[in-house]
Image (cartoon, rainbow, N blue to C red; front, top):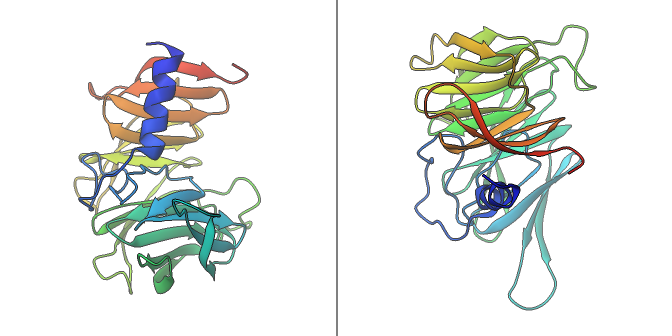
Length: 254
């Protein structure tokens, strides 16, 4: 597959137009939101409920793009040390920060409402949500940690988003970006791409790790259309056989 095709697929994953059915995607890695964006777990911008949402340091901002005229800033809300943002359902936003996950609602006018939060010890915090289950990874690298930081996968029940309930955790080596397909999480770790069974959210289990597949984040549109990003470039990967197979790449510097 050529670089051009990889670029088109990557763009469609990020900015696919006009899906309106709401809810989780088939892969469970993101939400079919109004603008159809499929979010990565380390993303700092997304679309939700017809609005463009951006993290600007510790401020979450929503924008509206009118057909004519300048871009309009709709609303802002402060989330201390915000790092990542993930959309779910029709109007929910999950903002990962050094100290937890803040759950917001955004209406079609772009106004934010605080819903709830899950706090944790200071560690970096990508997050994804599949329906009523939230998955986040904590790691002790970079500057968003303390000497007592954690390296772990955490799973929460968010059926009541005002009061997230931790279900379980799994120690991992420097976990970072993650995505879900069927009953498996795929997690980028310092040891390579890890496959974790989450068929029972109360007992996640590491299946295997692929050290040859190094990554920072992973976005699953379908198992055969998976994008992973790393310091070395962007890769189109097929997970349909249960083992990551690189089909094409855009290497750093190309």
